[in-house]
Length: 250
Length: 289
Image 1 (tube, rainbow over the protein chains, first blue to last red):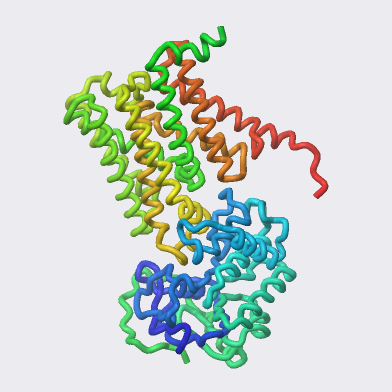
Image 2: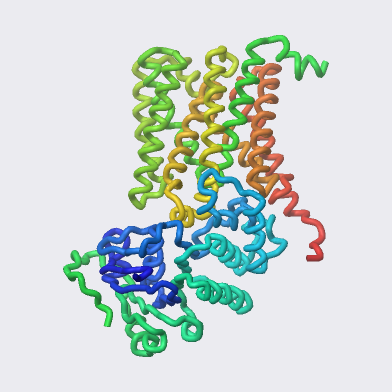
């Protein structure tokens, strides 16, 4: 049974597809890199998986997971860092599955939060407002929250963007640890070298799927060229898509 | 002497005691709402909603004269209608909430002014616009206190999703469906508190007792809980000082309260611990680490 099953999924905004006719499966425990140029639909696909965006067409099956079994790491640009909330409280929201709307944060939960903060190397930052953190530190905070969510499916949107190599190494170690624990991971990435070294499976996305499979087979210059040539702009005068249920993946 | 100026009015006159009780109730409930309005970058939304309430109150006035219950009910209905319609339009289309609100409140404002001009006199209009906290009777005071209590209870219920939705709305949407209802409940609280304040301060100034204290708090703390406490204290202090000022001079009570709050705000802008101008100009020597 696949953990994730895309059935001819089209995702987009205002009827314009950003991910066009994607079909395929992700096995439980897989470590999948999603690559492609800017505007290729990587973030859109991840939003579709976590349920923020409803497919325009087709469907995404989560293999029996409900939304609480999914952890999502958004791009940090989506977060209002001027809001006066401490690192401790922010990371603590990762316990939502246990606390919900009204559950209290007891002693055990406090311990858990502190351990998660320590695990990403932010000891001593517990009471700092998130607005005072650097980009790399904020990324560590986001990883700490995912850690607390203890989810079977983890979806990371450009987790290593604009952070230094030390932070990248630390956070990549967490990704490997989650993979080792049998969780399913999808990450939108830009660094081809990292994908080649650390991710077993790759989906090359350029609006439609260009290629999907074992990284070594998929990450070829030809496929990347095809992806790069993708036209980014939506066509305002586009007509309704007539393509039937077949994926365009090779 | 000092006693006569600061405490005497309240021991001597019942209407002053009622006004003080009302202003404290308004502060306790309204200031936290103001803090969230500010943090969610909705300060002007609050202002827009205040305008939207006026026509509703005017309809109440048209139907049953200067009856506070009718005007309150009218204000609530108009406020809710505008808040919910604007919220729904913003959420189901790409239109930003403020733009969506602007269109709705302009429409309802035009409607309301037309209604007032059918029946009202200028004095009635002044009462609706600027309120009169000194004319508050026991029944009205009870309504104000009841609304304040409801506000605090609802705020406690939606506090967690409201905070998370303000910081990281996408995250909240992945773990819970509470974000939308929490947002609508929050808009409802904004309306309730505007209506609540309009009896004391009028539709035009009611939002002042919410937004100004929030602005003041922003200059003194980086912590949400502390900001809410500071805002409540600032609002209540402005209310008390405004009442005294109004009693001793000829300034009407509503504007006096908002003027005091504005003075505190200016002081905070200048000398606030967090980002105050003086603090920025003379930050002291930089730290070791």
